[in-house]
Length: 366
Ligand code: NAI
Ligand code: MG
Image (cartoon, protein in one colour):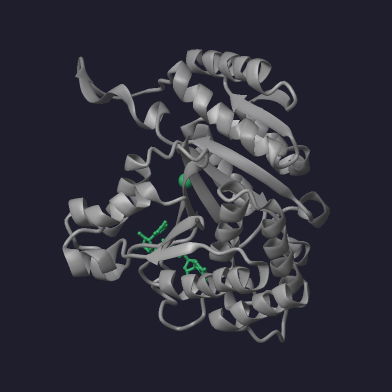
């Protein structure tokens, strides 16, 4: 049977950018014979409007069964005053939590045509293609004890960095699996010089490597040095694996090496399912962009590249992912720009659907 895909366009520009991805999915069916069983459902504010909850139980159950979930974005001013328990974001958080998506993948990829957008020198970022894997379900954001307590006459804020061996091992495996599909190189980042959890992190990553992935090149780096190296010469890296806190900082830093929010895809992966594929949710990094929603202005590339990640990491179709990324690269090289990518004078921006047209034309031509 065909691989299954659940599409959750969400709110704001979510449905607009997802409409372009639907056209690309159809193209793969027609032209490449890659057919998916696609179903579509509600998440976020639109789900609240219909069901009174940002994620219906039936949608949650569907997400658990499919091979991959592709999400647009959730939220918007209309929902800002809702109670926390039914806010659009809760729909997204429930998906991540119940699917136990512990590995957050944030690629930092620089298309040559956009290298001028970076705040770094062009030769430092041109052709950059690295992947940061952030542990997403444990560490200092979740560790106990936590809280603000009274100690003598002052208050103390407490969080606990805590990692179990199995939590480190599973995200390390995600990183090594990923490296085998890319440049076969992993750099693990922690602070083993000052943190117990860092010492354990380094040991476990090394053990998993030696026992299961000796073919992958592994190095270790202190996370602060890693931040320096990421801005000095990011092309030295292929896959970086790190904890929740350091990953939060390093992935935002790496993302901005390459430019616009409208270009950034992401994936969150969990444990392998019975068919060997990981539980997976793919989504652009950006939100619902209420300021431009409904105007056919949004850049669909972040969502398109999220689908390319699904091809690569859920559907074992790295060649087809390359094909789609090359089509995007060609369109950018031809000077096609949505409004968020305008830098040069005298360039007229294209609409969301025209960017979709251009990517489909490039796929046809390729
Ligand atoms: P945002 O990412 O929606 O927008 C930030 C800025 O970037 C805006 O000026 C927007 O127009 C622009 N932008 C974003 N994506 C774009 C695209 N594809 N093409 C062109 N321009 C783009 O973040 P913001 O404004 O902080 O949040 C808006 C809403 O989205 C809020 O309700 C927030 O909670 C929600 N949100 C949802 C996320 C998700 O679904 N994963 C992530 C971040 C925010
Ligand atoms: Mg962050």
